[in-house]
Image 1 (spheres, rainbow, N blue to C red):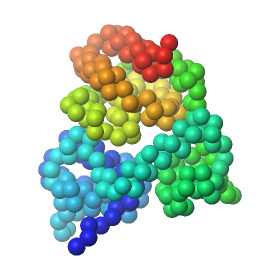
Image 2 (image 1 turned 45 degrees about the horizontal axis):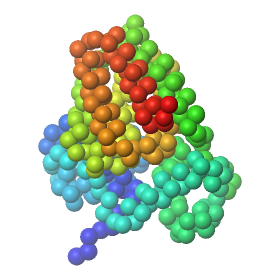
Image 3 (image 1 turned 135 degrees about the horizontal axis):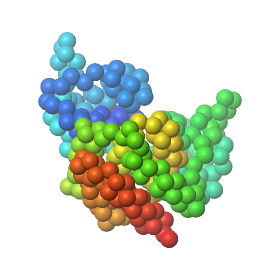
Image 4 (image 1 turned 180 degrees about the vertical axis):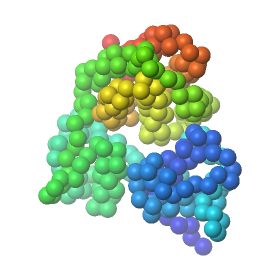
Length: 294
């Protein structure tokens, strides 16, 4: 019997659910509630159910009558579920379209027909890529016809400014009077960084690498209990997303980044906030230089 063919969306959602299982340390037998996953991933129940069915074929979850889906085994670090060449091709096309927008080749506003003609794609392929970009808040469907890219950090200088902003914001968040370390969430972040160092860097997708870093930095900012700090960081992270995808090819830099993340986590867990604040500023400054140059 032929194996079912899963859409690129289903494969991406399966990866995100596997990340949740691993990051949260969900035990074998833990029941996965579809509505909780819907809220966490911002999609409806139908695609969540298909993603769970894909995970079932990989042995990560199982389904029992009256019990729904349950964890069957721990996912491997940064395990992926791209079951078709189409999924691999669309990842490359997604990045190419984003980079062409960054370089000014593509206009802010465009139509599906224009993208079909430029890249030799079928309409369904373009719609899948645009729908993924919309979920990641990079593009919006226009009220009439066509699509419009949201503002990004579309130059080296603007990206450098984002790091300068983060060097002001994030270290200050740690020194807020009401700062509270979220021990449980930081331990999840530690597991993610350790998994990256244990071979995950070579296997993780661009999105998984980006999300692991964002998870840590936003967890740290959330400890400030200052909603404006956290929202400001989230906005900057969204603006820099595509540029970050393009800087994740330097494996040596990624190893060093993960090691620094672990040092930062240890400082926070030991309650050494002043040291953590200074270390975070140096970490962001170093990332600014190694990614973008002085």
